Structure formats: C-alpha cells, structure tokens
Length: 109
Image (cartoon, rainbow, N blue to C red; front, side, top):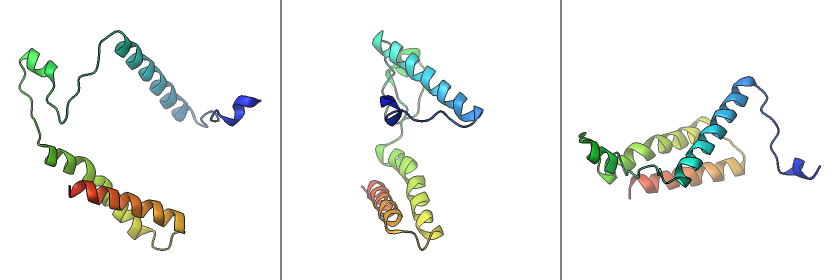
C-alpha cells in the first residue's frame, strides 16, 4: 500500500498505545481550543496576563536564570553521554558533540 511508507507502525505495547492516544486527544483538544480563540497564554518563565487578571502573585524569573535552568541538564546529559560511551561510531560522536556544543553555547549566552 502507498501509505505504508509514510505511516509509522502501531505501538508494540499497551502503554505506548495509551500514551499515543492521550497525545492525540490532547493535541486535538488544544487545536480546537486555539481555533475557538481560547489561546494558551504566552509566558517566558511564568508571568502571564491571566495571572495578573486573577490577582495572584506570580514569580518572574530572569531570562538568564530561566535559560540556565532549561539548558544545563541537557548540557550535562550530553557531556555525560560523551563520557559514558568513549568509543562510539563517527555519527554518534558528531551528533552528540553538536548537541553538547549547542547547549554549551546556550548556557553561556
């Protein structure tokens, strides 16, 4: 069949099938909500307009601290992966080095 080249095979376990179903349902609900105008509020590190309307105090992180919180675990994971697999093939080394360099650059911007 023509679509077999484009479609992924069905998940092999009931857990993966349920996660895929939940993901599909939540994406459909979010799409319907966005099309009706109930947009998700944009927040760069937790201060949204909806919080100001409700009168709740919210924490606003600086961009630098927020980026460190987001990118440092990824930098550590890619650096540890370079250390754990000392003799990988060239493609793994290239991709992992690019990830480590990217997250290092993001942390020190």
